[in-house]
Image (tube, rainbow, N blue to C red; front, side, top):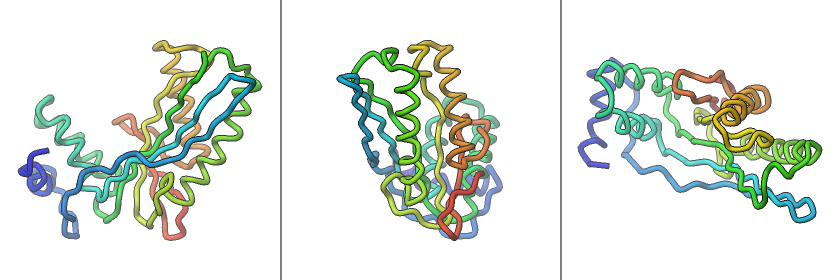
Length: 207
């Protein structure tokens, strides 16, 4: 990303969005590589890997900057401004902290339709408590700090419906409900994301 962009995002927030952050913007840093875990299941040769992960942004300015840079030349100035303001509110930019982009990948080592309903239930019952543990003990492997925000994009296919648009719609809704009820994320926002933050007791609170 051009160096000018690194410096200009703070000015954009102040002058265009009227967001005056009460702390000095930290030096810009690129997002880290994915960190996380691999949870494997084997049902007599039918294998699947559930891989919860986190992409760490060292500060909230860096997270905002990535979104702004991705849309600034593709939409009208008013649209970009509205998106940035909403995102700034969603990640509580007025309070310092990091942002963790969290989620989980699923790697099928066989046809996913081969798993029985009982096996799918077993995978969920075993993997979700581990993912919750990873979140509440840190950001999927990173040490959490009060004020850190985690963001999740609830998208994915429903295992028994294959890789279709209908399956993705059903699977994404299922993930959003799970993220809210089980992991304590907030409602799905206008940008399609769900957010939560770590309080002083390192508990996740919805945004």
